Image (cartoon, rainbow, N blue to C red; front, top):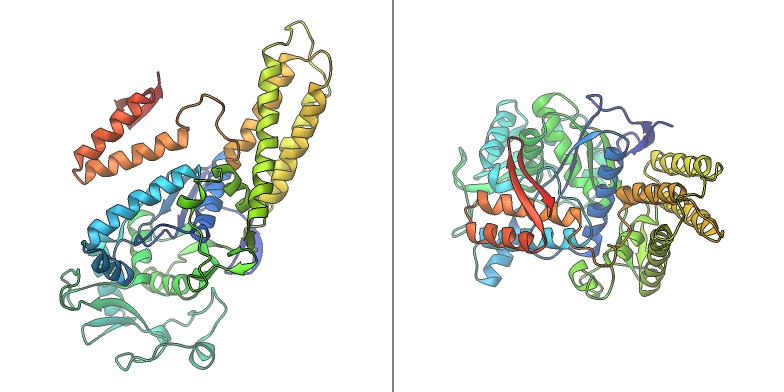
Length: 467
């Protein structure tokens, strides 16, 4: 079966065909780093981690990018409240994001571009739009001229008339039209800013992602992802900017995940039901959180509650018990027992069924069902008096393959750092060295050494192995 992806742009499930055979470039909008992520932010992080894992599972080399928005209005306000600079705030919560996502079993992205590392490219991008007539300066701000882009609204299926008469838009007399959006903001006194042809200022939100995609991934992505709330205006504006600049599609496939409700209510600061993983992980396993996120279809809303957490923990325990029981039995089997000829065909059917579910627009819920069917089959096998080592190894290998995609198994008793945790720490160490924070880099090196991780410099970069 061919992988099919529901494309938000066309509102259809389409066969996935990458631009370059065997390679996938995927960009998922990352956090604005002014606070800890909440469980709603965690859903796309976990889901697109699984998309990336499955792509690699079926043989693709994946260039996976997720950005850090490390300057914007919220960050400026929060930094003022805390009495620190915007860069200091950014470093604090980038570190927290890496810690939280590592704890959730998320494999580090291939690249984590930052807005503040992309300012020259953002300015160049805006200047080109201005030269082409898609942007105009007004009072030190620069706006995108939406009327100039006929396809504005094609992702969210809105048109300019709908936007003008049916949607609330802030009125700004400096704009030519209410739908125009800001590309560059003039700085207020004391705010963080950069020099530009339009004076001191900073980029608008939408232009940041467009410029980072162009700089780090090229003109057209295979997949662009994010939460449903980003379809409009963020992704719509990204399309308008990027396609006006390049004349090429920004992305071939657009993917958007649904929201997370808390006890069947929309998560909201006003009603005080915002949950963040950092607090949740003190009483809930990372695997149970991932399980909840993956047992509903990614495009549908899911409900997070004490009941769903309890169900998740029980389900994860069943999966872990099956693995552990197989390994325990392996220690006592006789090498003389022949393989059961019926096992390999059954496992091949489970493997094919799992892949078929994932090929159907990443249907993780049904893929998990296949995993439980495999567990049931393994439990039945273990009830026999005599078992074959080769059969048990086959069950364990298949379960491990499922886990490499979904990341639901807890570490085995006595296990040290997970591979994903090591990779994340190495990414943080590389970033610290880049920022010349050698104290933090040495701290991470010593932590890894204490955990039995040996670092090796190679021609291809830093590698690691266990003692």
